[in-house]
Image (cartoon, rainbow, N blue to C red; front, side):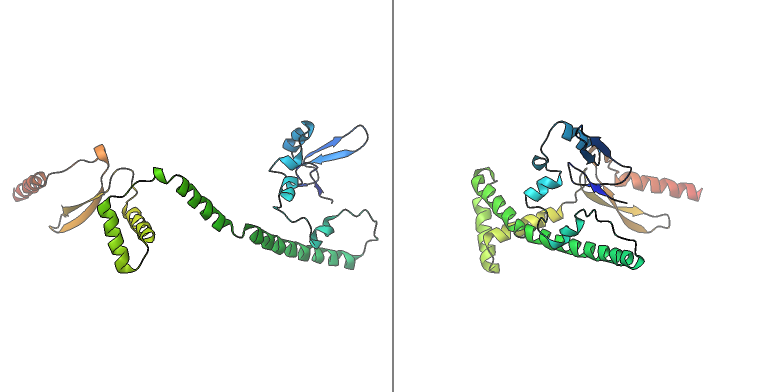
Length: 224
């Protein structure tokens, strides 16, 4: 069973799947899906479309020169059937797949090295260019941060980031307000603390006097 590659995007086109286009001169083109077939008929260049392997190879996103890629070359050489050769071929295919996967991971790590530093540099450049849009601190707040940084031996910017992270951690993250704690009287006469979420107009306050009146009414009913 031969698994051919798509003529347009380079993905594997499995037997009985995809589309085969036969030109008048006898040349056949195999496509993995109708998307590739339509783009081929529209005469689009695969090297200019980001979802094709040709573009990824041109942009340096995939390995191009590697010894493991030579095993995928088509070899139309008839060989007499041999059981031992067949078993060795299967083992070699598994081993080659492992080696290729390991080399692809190493290639990816090498290609992505320094990406975080580049992103941080771009972010700092953006902040430096649009510094006038950032919120300004009051003079008293700046003096307080400077004194606190001098005591701790830290930089003022690091201290500002720490305080900002602390403020974000304090937020409850709920859509409707925060949380209210109430004291509730149990049936056995004990008192327990209950936390309830406050949701704007959905929250209804209950007076303690009403609770006391209800408790007195219950006591009167019990005495009767």
